[in-house]
Length: 207
Image 1 (tube, rainbow, N blue to C red):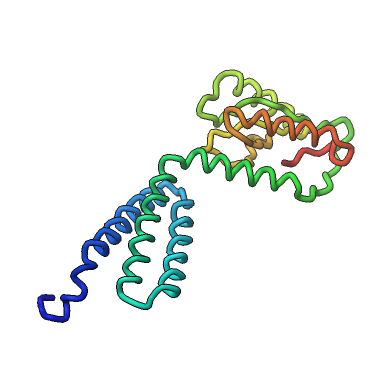
Image 2 (cartoon, helix red, strand yellow):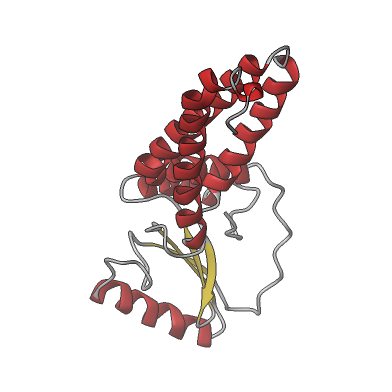
């Protein structure tokens, strides 16, 4: 560490140390979100790590070049993690809506035939009983839906999602479909209405 061979490396200590500090801080934030099962951070980290490997493969003619690539990668990773940390909810909402939009083009299965006299009932409501802001109206609707299911009807409730519940769920025999947040639920409601009134699947609700 103190011999003559270390002299050529000394000019790069500060840049290398800063790169390592950025990687360490970013890794701590990524680990924090992994505990919360928010895996977008780990995925973004993997992509940037792959970029770093490619950068070293392309620019490795000297020690300085390798250190520069590591420094840029460390700064980039930390900046990306910080942005994701503060914009995670907005980005997750965008990705979920993108996935929901893609799902509109999936082929729909042929619905099973219901017994004579039974209905397929679709209920639109802003929230369901598991929503953070659920109240008496949501409980009232669920009780109605549950009783209709017991009578042999097929009931689907379409509502918004607070991000804490799955996109599809069955509660007491009632199919719950959650799409969009406080405002985007109305956009998806329009899509659902268009699908519901189409001749192809007017008797079947799957989103």
